[in-house]
Amino acid sequence: MKRGRTIAILIATHSVVALLAIVVWTSLTRAKLEKPEDTLPTRKISAELDWLSSANPCRDAERAIRKADLTFLAYQGYALWIPGVADSVSKAIIREGDYGVLPGTTDAIMSPEHREQLAIARAYARWYNEKILAARPVSLDRHKVRK
Image (cartoon, rainbow, N blue to C red; front, side, top):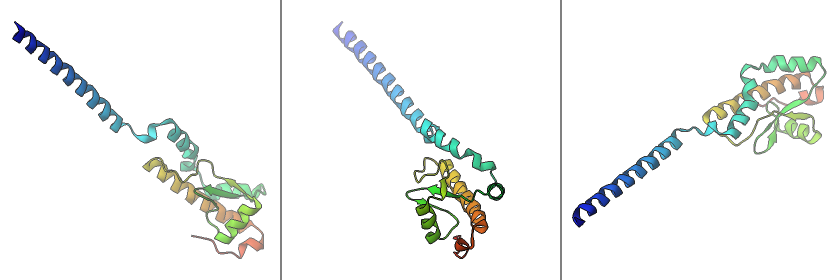
């Protein structure tokens, strides 16, 4: 009788252990499948850059020029910089405060898709700033455009 009871306890214990192993394995597998860009902060950052996929920097710069808004677009990475202009001009613009920060730019890359969005943001700012620079007074035109 004792032997039968011991076997029943062993079977029940193995069943519980097997069930726990399945639960742990399933939760770990599910965690691996979830993409980091599905987290709320990443979605917010990505949403700030979504508009760039359909934006036209030349058209937007021309519209700003018509309104006499010759403000440059700054890119916020590790340090603030103005894409599309020489470093000396970028420093002068930042020192004078004649810029607006492109929303959503950062050096903290959250996902491969976010990396692509940031590359688009840099290209957008470069094209936009080159147009603005061309419309600015001669004192800034003498500086070379950074490619």
